[in-house]
Length: 440
Image 1 (cartoon, rainbow, N blue to C red):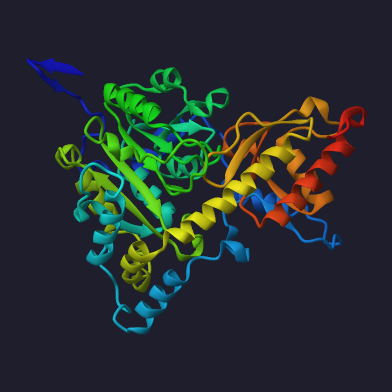
Image 2 (image 1 turned 30 degrees about the vertical axis):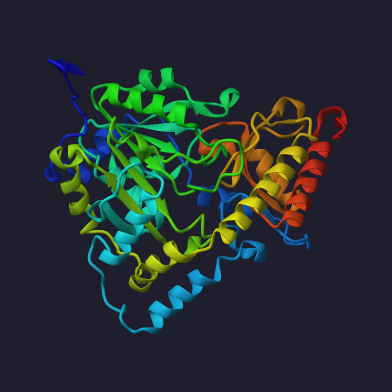
C-alpha cells in the first residue's frame, strides 16, 4: 500500500487476465504446497459413517450431519415459490438454453434482492447465475487459479473450498476462527498466513460450521486487513438472513468501498430448497477494481464453459425473491432458534462435550469432544462411526471441517426428532464414558 499525495494506491494481488487460467499447469505446482494432505467432502464423510449403520436397528435413522431439513414438513418451502416454478414450467417459454450468465430478468431480481441491505444499487451486470452455491464456489476459485497463487480459508470451514482448490491447483492456507470469541476471525492469524501471492480470503457468514454471525464492527476490521494485504474477500452468504441471535446479518458488500467483494449465495438455505440448485455469484465493483484487474473477464470466460442452472427455475426467480412473505421467513427462523436452544441445552448435559458458543444463525454448531473422558473411542471419526452403529444416527466429525476431536452438529430438524437424536447421543456418551460418568 502506497500513498501518492492524498490518494491511497493499493497493489491488488489478484490482477491478471483470462490467459492466466491454466488449471492443469497450476495443479502439480500448487497441490504440493497445500497444507492439508487429505480432505473429505461432507458427502464422503457421511457415506463412510453411513456404512456403519446397523441394518437391524429398526429405529428411525436420524441425520444431524447436513444442512437439508427439507424432508421435515415444518421446513417445507413457501407455496409461492412452488407456484412460481410451476407457472414458469407450464408456460412453455423456458425450455431452451439460457445465456451463460443467466436470464437477465433473474439477474436483475438478484441485484434488487441484494440491494435491499446495501447503501448502493447492485448492477445486474455483476450477477452470474450458477448451479447452486457450489457452482458459484467453482467459478470464484477458478478465476483466481494461476501458478503460485494462494487463498486464505477459515478454520474450521466448509470443506468444499479445500477440495476444489486442491483440484485446480490453488494453494490453500488457513486462518483461525476463535471459539472463545464467538468464532470471530483471528486477525493476527489472517495476516500471518498472507504473502505477496495471496489473492483472496473466504468468509462464511452466517457461519458453516460454527453457527456464528459476524458483527458489523468485526467485518469492518476484516475489510481493513484485507485491504492492507491487497486481497479480495469472497463472502459466502448462502445462509444469509438465517439469523436468530443477538447479531443481525450484515452483508460483506457493505464494505465494498474499502475492499473488492464477491458475494456467493443461493435459494437453497433460506428457502429450504437445496435440490433446486440455483445460486449466484455477484461482483461488487463500483470503483471498477475487478474490471480493471481482469477479474470480470476471467469470470465471464469461466461461466461460458460451466453448466447453467435450469432455465425455468431462473425464470421463476423474480417472483420467488419478490413475493415470498416475511411470515415464511419468520416461521423458519423461529424453528431454527427453537432447535438451536434445544441443541445447546441438551448438549450441555453431556460431560464429554463442551459447547463454547450458542448459535446465532445458520443450521449448525461446533462442539468439542473430550476424547480423554471416553473409553474405546480414539477420535472424532471413531466416535461418529460407533455412534452410527449403536444409535442409528449421523453426526459429522470435526476433522472434516478442519478441527480434529470436534463435532459439527446440525440442529435443523423437526424438534421432536432433534430431541430424540440428542438423547441417543447422551446415552451413547454415558455408555462409553470412563467410570461411566453420569450425564445430567
